[in-house]
Length: 194
Image 1: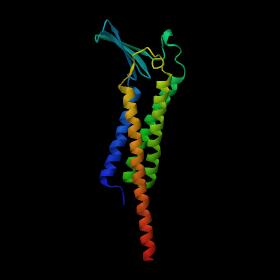
Image 2: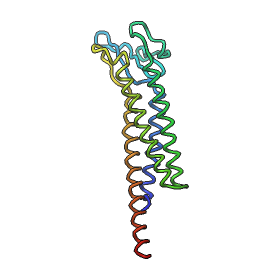
Image 3: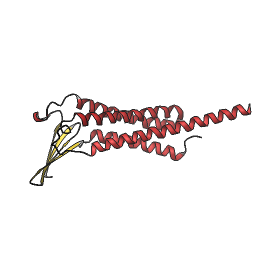
Image 4: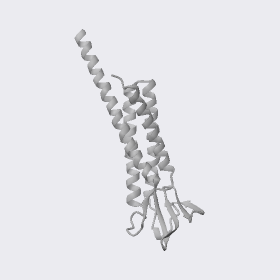
């Protein structure tokens, strides 16, 4: 039994969502945010991403700078940010590979394309997970107990991307399994008729 049209639609839509999650989380500037208050009043919010750090002052002005231009009190930026960036770029490439393979499965050999898409979606999930772990474990803000930081929308979209990558992976495994069972069934019918 070939994958149903509904299953194919789910795979295509979730693969497209995988690209969106990878792109948004990579380009987003809010992986971590730190609100600063004075006497209970919010005076500014600092957001930190993998490319830039921005400061929003009383919602009237904001300034951004490259995250590599770290102030001295934060310590050395280290190679962790480069690894995070590399894993995020790899997640984009593997998510694009996933959707290309899924589209190829609709017009070309489904079995080979599903295998390639399955591996690409698994690698997308692995790359996103590595980026999230490295960023969280090595970021100067997340290592200070007294800082009242919270993870921003970019970080959360990357988490959604990991869940989505695993969902695509398992749906593709299901489609491969169904294709295998159908080929086994057809082979047994062919042997019975011979």
